[in-house]
Length: 61
Image (tube, rainbow, N blue to C red):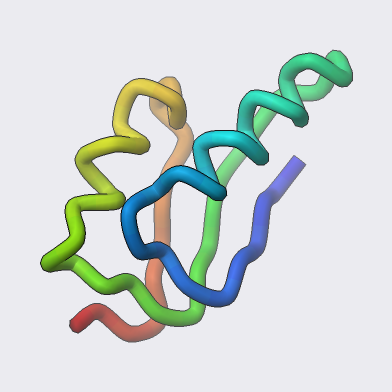
């Protein structure tokens, strides 16, 4: 599953969605967001949850 979201802020919602995908028995192949609010540290929080899958952001602030 490729997860697409609008904003990556603290990473809580994205982390929860990755967990739900895995609980459903699917594999996460990547995450893309329209905007990443880098100063809130969401990318760092997701590093473990991504398990090597790429995280791409169109705009990073």
